[in-house]
Length: 376
Picture 1: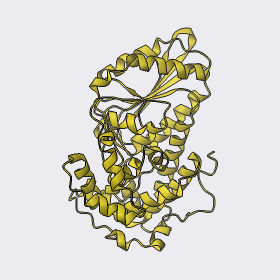
Picture 2: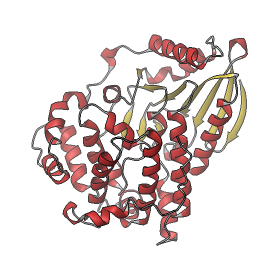
Picture 3: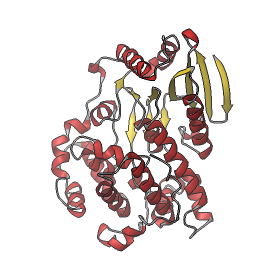
Picture 4: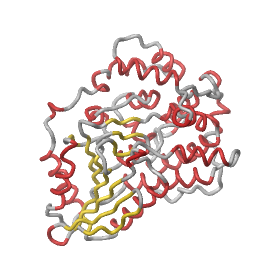
C-alpha cells in the first residue's frame, strides 16, 4: 500500500493488487463535522477521480469515511452561510458559486465514471453525502445507514442530483421524500434505488482487504462485474434488514401525494392523522419547513422530468446560487445550526405567499456563460 496524498480531511491511497493492478481508496476524514464537505474536500476527491480515470493500473475506486458514525453529513453550510452574510446582495455569491459548481461537477463525474466506484454508505448520509453516493456504480448500505435530504429545513432544495434520482424512485415516493426530508434506512435505500448491496458495517475493512486481493483486469466492464460478484458474495442476509418505511407505507404515500397541485398535496400530508410515527414526523417536518423549499421541490420535479443528467445539474446550479441570494437559506441555517432556536422566520411565510413571479427568480441564471455548460 502506497499513500500518495494525505491532505487534511481527505486521504488518498493506492493499494497494490495482484497482477500489477491497483485499488484507489478515498477516505473522508473530518469526524468532528461528520465528514461534511468543504470546497477543498470536493477538489481533493475530484482530482483523485480524474487522475485515476487516466491511470490504466487503477482498476477500481472506493469512497468511504474514516468512521462508522457517518459517511458524509452533507455540505459545510455554516461556512456557506457565512460567505453569503458577508456579501449581501452579491449574485451569484463567489464562494457559493465555486462550492456548488465544483460539487455538482464531482457528482456528475461519479454518475458517469467509467471504472467501478464503490461508495460505502454506512452511518449518516445526508445532502451532499447522498450526492456522492447516488451516482456510484456500486453502493453499499449497512444496518447503520441513515439517509436524508432534509433541505426543506434550511431553505434549500434536494440538489446534488436530487432532481434526477428523486424523480426515478418508485411511484411518487421521491416527491414525498423531497417535501418532507423523511429519513431512510438500508431497506428504504434498496427499495428506492439509492443502494445496491447490504453488508454489515463491521465488515468494511475486510471488504477493502478482499478488494485488494481481487484479480482485476484491464477491462472496466469486467471489473464492474468482478466487484458486483464480490459484493454479492459478502452481502448480509436479508433477514437482517430493517423494515422499509417507504415500502410499508407506499400506498399511504401514494394517497397523500396523488393530488395534481402542490397546495393540495401539502394539505393532505399535513392532515395525516394515522398512527405511523415515520409519517407523523414527515408531516411535521413539512409543516415546519420553508414554503419556498416546498415550492422548489415541486417546480424542479416538473421542470426536470425530461432533462438529461447534465441538464439537471445545470439547472440545479442556477437554483442553488439563487437560494443563497434569497433569505430563507441564511435564516434556516441560523435557526437550525447556529442559534439553534429551531424557530426560523420564513419569507414568504406560507405557501400561499409564494407567487409565480417570486419562484421564477430562482430559475433566473445570474450569468451569461453557464459554469457547467461543458457537462454532457
